[in-house]
Image (cartoon, rainbow, N blue to C red):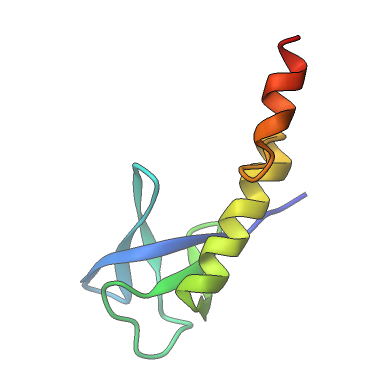
Length: 86
């Protein structure tokens, strides 16, 4: 299964590329398929290629869902942790 992840643009570089960040991870990304990218934009990235520009709200929602399914954590469910320690 493949997963595209939202990243925030840190800065633009030469040859249709930029540096992107999610959390503490930073990497390079090809942006030649997306129009008018600027620092602060959120991009959906798959295999080092930006495939879509999305809103900050959509990025936050996507990252919350990814966190919930990959790490089996629901940030809104504070009672689950208390129940599992009993």
